[in-house]
Image (cartoon, helix red, strand yellow):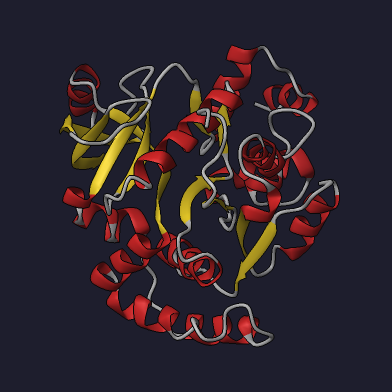
Length: 316
């Protein structure tokens, strides 16, 4: 089997439930109303979400692609998927309980359908220069996961500069016994938005930008939820007998009603570095389109000039 052929139990989970608060001013300028950034066409003719789905489709079929969204975004989602020849599945969260709930709900949902499922999580608001190389790296992560080690694997971007507005992954020694297209490293720690001096140290030490693109088996993710977010896990575990049934939507609403809010990065991953590995995403340009400054800087570098950019500069 070639590197490009996806493992049989690979699932892509596209995280598309955010509100895009930091880009609200920009999307309001582009559309005249506030719109979650994943549904905005900021880099060309199609939205960030559809760009992500097109990227995923290079290696993962729509029937094994799950988009996790949020109540109140159904109209945007319907418009986006109407343009897809083969639409992925959509899992709607009834309320915002943070990224931990989104990740762990997807893990429970997929485990009910494919107990051997290996999940890759991809935010819907990233820019990637080489989609095929990026997705080959995603496949490489899943191949490492399927070698039987109960680890969650993060894909870290090769930093272009000592950026202070990104999270960083400080790498440890390479992990023995894992065959992968790129060396797998232990994770020493996470550093979120360091000051310039620390960012310089991380950059020169070979640390990676944290892309929040990561994977793990469904069973490993559910177990991590049980250990580090037991209250959330208890509520999501109540779903297992309803998932796939006519009562699924009702059961998810009940589970979310009193579910605690938590961040998967801060409240799960940062607590278990010994269960993590990181793979370097080398020679693939990557950018998190989280701020207007970053969007405009990328457009300038790519020499892309959408109509809204000129009017934005005219108004200051």
